[in-house]
Length: 121
Image 1 (cartoon, rainbow, N blue to C red):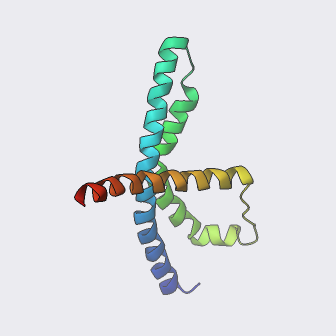
Image 2: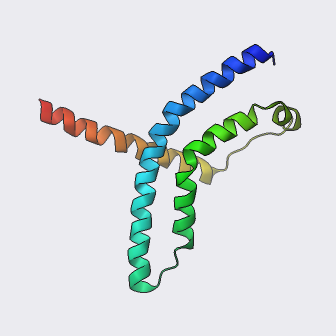
C-alpha cells in the first residue's frame, strides 16, 4: 500500500475507533462493574470465586486502549506481510457476544436520552 494512503487510512480508522470505541467502552465498563460488584456480594455470602469476574473487569478496563493498539499493530508492515494469506473467521458465539454488546450499548445510550427528551416535552 502506498505510505501516504496507508497513513490517511490509519488516521481515519483511529478516528473512527476513538468515537465508536468510546461509545462501546463506557457501557461495557458500567455493565462489568455491576457484574463485578454482584460477584463480590456473592463471594462474601457464598464463598464464590472472583477469578472470572476479576478477569472480565481487567479485560473491560483495557478494551478501549487495546483497540488502538490492535489497529496500529494490524496495519504495521510486519503484520501485513505475515498475515496476508490468513482468513479471519468469527464463530457464532463471538458474533452473538458482539451483537449483545451492541444491543446493550444502544440501550445504554438511547434510554437516558429518551427519558431526557420526554421530560423536556
